[in-house]
Length: 247
Image 1 (tube, rainbow, N blue to C red):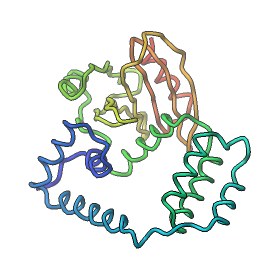
Image 2 (cartoon, one colour):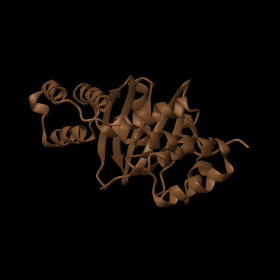
Image 3 (cartoon, helix red, strand yellow):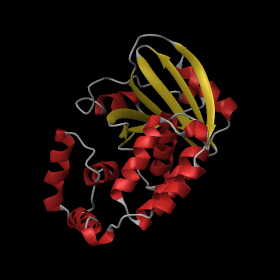
């Protein structure tokens, strides 16, 4: 039998990021799926081996001083100081080397909110892992009810076929430890992922454009929801799509 579990669920289970309900869902699935069960078991064995005390050694003081010297003075905030203390508490030359790479990433990564970067990563994963949709349908009256019982909100679903952006389906995804709805639209050969979740307020915001890792990300709020549209579609056509979603 082919495995039908969402890969994000399995990854979240391995990383200990799922809530109680989702954890039970994965644990109920594992006994019936040898592939997932084997993957989880292998990860646990690797993590157990990496936690062995023989892998950790106190890093030399000179190495700590070198890493501190690489961080610009303006970036030496209290959170970073806490991070450095954590690194040296862990100890280990290999661990310190990984931390050094993380320092360069933190200082030199491209601009953009962590949320938008996470959405772009989610968009790319959906294309690479062949998991673009959980429900495949061009009918909004099929896609919208599919979310019932899976979310604690009802996302608005519109078919924009007449305007050149046909609905293709939808799926669940996970951003910053909460579940969101994703609607999938097509424009020629381009996929558009539209992420939707409840906003903290009822305010309406204009469409904001950003480009991250070669993908265009459009952000806006309306009707009590947050919207993020992500695609490699050119920004002009993606903006037209967002305006159709924002009458």
